[in-house]
Amino acid sequence: MLPDGASLVVATCQPVGIEGYVQAAMAFAAWAFKPAAQRLLESEMQARARAELASLERTNQMLSWKGGPQPSAIGGESERGDLKQPDQTFQPGDVEAMIRRNNELIGRL
Image (cartoon, rainbow, N blue to C red; front, side):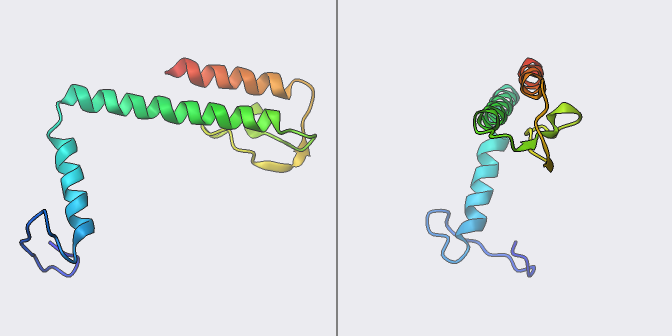
């Protein structure tokens, strides 16, 4: 079924003109026919990878700090630990607070 309402029947090995639709359908079918336990495991692995990426981003922020902006980690940061207040500078204890927040997020895993 295409966006304009038309439907086409094509061979999956040669979906000329609608490759993206066939690839999406095949990816969904591969996911849908996996056992629930395997889907859950893959979901947990993706969550761990996202948490590790966030941890690395926070570490990079700490290592690249040169008296720049204060991370919003000190009170209500996003899950990624983004810098949201570029007009502020680090205060004593900010790095320690970022490390504690990082450990809290890792602990959720």
